[in-house]
Length: 269
Figure 1 (cartoon, rainbow, N blue to C red):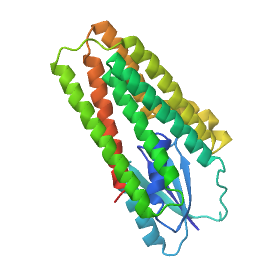
Figure 2: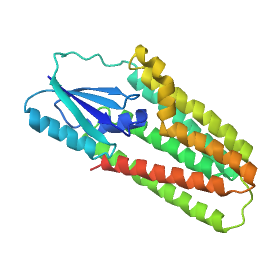
Figure 3: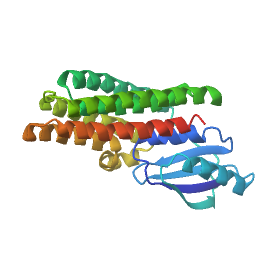
Figure 4: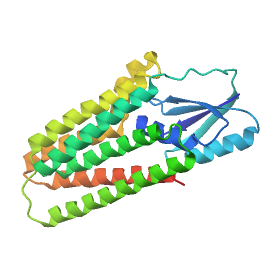
């Protein structure tokens, strides 16, 4: 058994973990993937049939995700048995439900409060829900079926993001009333808590010893940064009496949604 350690510089939360799992799912020699999200590290355990060929295939697959993967070292491992978390599937359903629920909450409140920041953040929640959903649907499915689902999810996200960009331009050049900053701040704060719970649950499921890493997880997560950005935009909307901060954060999040969609589309190749 061989063990190769990778540094994944852009692996900020469990959604990237699931993307990596799906990407490496079609390499039969891999026996286990051990993720250390706080330190952005991944240990890959695989059979040593042809060490060079196997690790080259694994490294190539990781590089295709553009998550900043870098091989650190390869060593022989005596570990043969791996204990899979029996609650992993249940946890995936929980975090999927949380993300999809907040997608619905944010898109409805975003429309009624006229906040593009909330609408964009709702699509980011939907993107995470897609990743967890694809992981669940992929269980017991063929590679071709998994690729079809990933392609559909990726294109759907891009279409929604493009619609969002068009709406941002319309509001920028139009004469729209200010978004409701109180709603922006309240809903984004609740979404921040929801993302924190998701990260906590996913990391706690791997090892009780890593519970103390919760703070590190929260502050390094893109989702948390986005939520905080919308809260700040809400404060600036009130302070400047301008919708520009809301449009700017909305545009930034839509760009992140498109980037996430492109990652998902790469799984369909």
